[in-house]
Length: 165
Image 1 (spheres, rainbow, N blue to C red):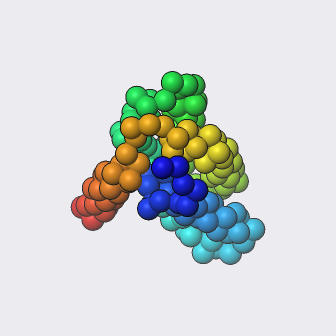
Image 2 (cartoon, rainbow, N blue to C red):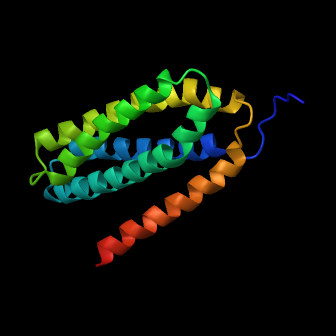
């Protein structure tokens, strides 16, 4: 029954795709910080807002669906406790970024530190949490992927609806 070939995409691969997407955005942001063009300021604000939205939705689907299911399926939940604390720290920085009135050096620092937090968090999820999730018995990660996708689409639609009004 145990095979080495990767099965169809699961919850972990969906979450990891989010991770890679946000990492690209952080890289783009860092490239903008070296630009002193007047237009860079608005681009940085827009990109920071997009990063914050992506991370907020990503954290929410993990907290609503992935983490509770994993908490039921594995014995060692220290990783999940740490992940939730990391989410809380990230949310605090996200709030500071969203509330900032100026796109200045402090703003840049907050976005860059958020990127570093997320980088650390992603490494732990990828190297430890996803490994445990895939090894856990009775955890339907393929079915969970659909749940995560559906919830993510709902949240994106809510954000789009709020932005339009």
